[in-house]
Amino acid sequence: MGLFRLLFWIAIIAAAFWLWRRLTRPARRPGDKNASAAPMVRCAHCGVYLPRDHALSQANLWYCSQAHLEQGPKPGER
Ligand SMILES: [Zn+2]
Image (cartoon, rainbow, N blue to C red):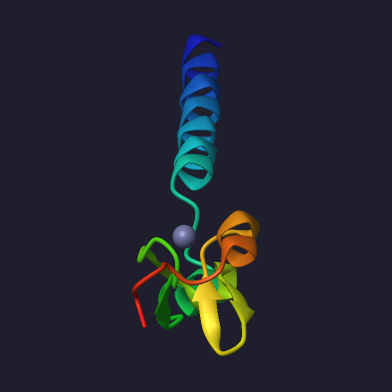
């Protein structure tokens, strides 16, 4: 039964390889596409650009973090 064992192991290795490729390279989800297409906004304090979904807004201005939101716009920016 040597041939049967050989085919058995080939099937196991092929299945494991297929599964490994699926885990290491997952298919693109619609959510990722929307996140990458999100408009970028500029932090009013430090000027860094970040996706609007991750930004905090206050008084029509965007901030990259809660700390910068509390510190407000950069002095002299206006
Ligand atoms: Zn900032």
